[in-house]
Amino acid sequence: MSAKFVNVDRDTALLLPPDMRTWVPADHLVHFILDAVEQLDLGAARVNERGTGSEQYPPSLLLGLLIYSYATGVFASRQIERSTFDSVAVRVLCADTHPDHDTLCAFRRQNAALVQRAFAQVLELAAGCGVLKVGTVTVAIDGTKVLANASKHAAVSHGHAQTTLRSLDEEIAQLLAKAEQADATPLQDGLTIPAEVARRQERKARLQLAKAEMEARAYARFQAEQTAYQASVARRQAQEATGKKPRGRPPKAPDPQPADTDQVNFTDPDSRIMPTKDGFQQSYNAQAGVDVHSRLIVGARVSQAPTDKQELGADVAVVRAHVPVGTVLVDSGFASEPAIRALEHDEHGRPTGLTVLAAWQHHAHGRTVAQLEKRVDPPAPAPAAPLAEHLRHRTATAAGRAFYSLRQQTVEPVFGIIKEVLGFRRFSLRGLAKVGLEWDLVCLAYNLKRLHTLSAKLRVA
Image 1 (cartoon, rainbow, N blue to C red):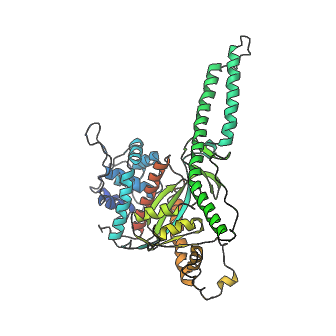
Image 2: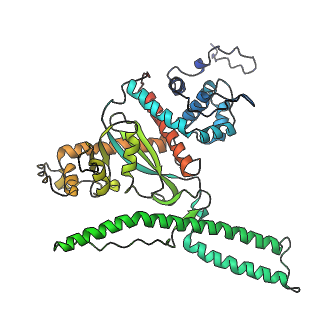
Image 3: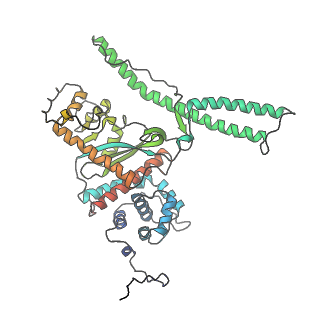
């Protein structure tokens, strides 16, 4: 008996099915995103209301296409345009239309308000289907460095800028003097003195702008640090007045002048050099607050700060814009006593009902034999004890350690999924506002992918 094979015929024209949704499985992510976008209020979308020009794509199609692309690891507008031809799921989403990369880029750039509103509405859908608990939640907050769309080699430091400016002034003077000499040695073929002077003047203008930007940043940093410095000096003086010896070194007065190592990047001036596991890179500090039960991102923002020390208050504010917060879990990088005190007490010193669990000191990985042994919980500090003692006690008890361990199980896996599964390691846009928009889009795509994984039945809360 001869072998039987499936007939593969690429030449006969096909009668396509009338429903394009049947091209992909019924439980495919693209169906879930289409259903979710249909339930969103897209009134905040920017469209051409005059009706002039060519027909425009509906905001629901473009938003759904961006969300699906980010959820499947496609971020560049040209790659998204290509997927409208190459990907069956994307052809279903676009109903076999093909938005070009300019349309996608303009829509993404102009609709920050729409993405933010969609992020909030998806959380409402998550609450409606029972995934996100309605009421006070526990949130784990952390930050991760995401590369900017700029090379660190396109940056200039303040010290190098000053040296280069002096060198350019000398070269321009030499070229002008050479132009006045009748018997001067000619330049190489293709080079002219006016063109060389213009090139150096153009570079000089760019360096002067960069130098002015660094000086403005340094003065803003000085103003922010001056208040803290004065408060620290006042505390030490008050302690000395009562006869107590102040602990630690005297505070150092901030300097309004930029340091030689301060830098500005010519490609993306809003980005900063930040420490990462791969060394110092041109990056942004992407922040996220994650609900410990649903593992949905309930607050997202982007910071220019290389560390998380001053980010806790702003992070909690964006989370509170979407859900009420009862407990916040953060690592030692966020452990700032003034920030925690400002969250747990109002301006009159009354408790706000919010509790922060923080690793008050950094511990090495692994546990000693003594830490493995069962031990009695330490006694609670007196109510009038310093806040630092209360913070240490919260994570020193068995219940506190178990509760705090939810942080590592919650927010760090979310960043791992975003970077490893989605593949989002570098922003496509430039500038703090546009980068913040793109991070909102990433978090929105993650949330819908998470809801699809949980097989959530979407309905309005």
